[in-house]
Image (cartoon, rainbow, N blue to C red; front, side):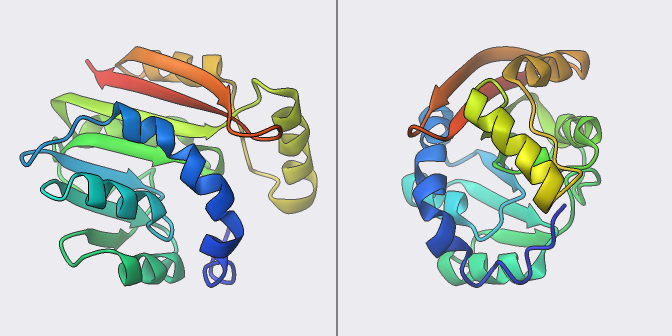
Length: 199
């Protein structure tokens, strides 16, 4: 993944216009109660965790990100009940069947081994656990152009997927796809949100 150490300081200000609407679909899907536990993979500065903690204050939340500077920004806005750890999606430092929900928002394209990340999500989910993946997608022309630009000029290993590719990966790795939606949050940004259930 990219090193976000230098980007952490101004990340929220620069990307809030994108992050807030991009989290609206996962927030609509989530069904949490006081017994629920949720892991936010690639939690960054904690924008999503801040939103879900306010909406579901009784839920147990964990966030993991490979960058300590991003986590430091997250800690500033989250309560002490939210457990934050340094780590990566391909090797989660949690016991099997630890979480009811695993969410990957706006990080999937940055993950070097996406199948390994999905396998790890499957491992740490409970038997009836669910996964939500939200990311920008090559389903849209503007995003295909952006994906090419990112690979050429910013981060060669970035891998934006079509929704059909992500669904196929989930099905291959023992998830049932419950819903999938591709949509625009403005004229430029095109995203998908996919909900899967462990099987």
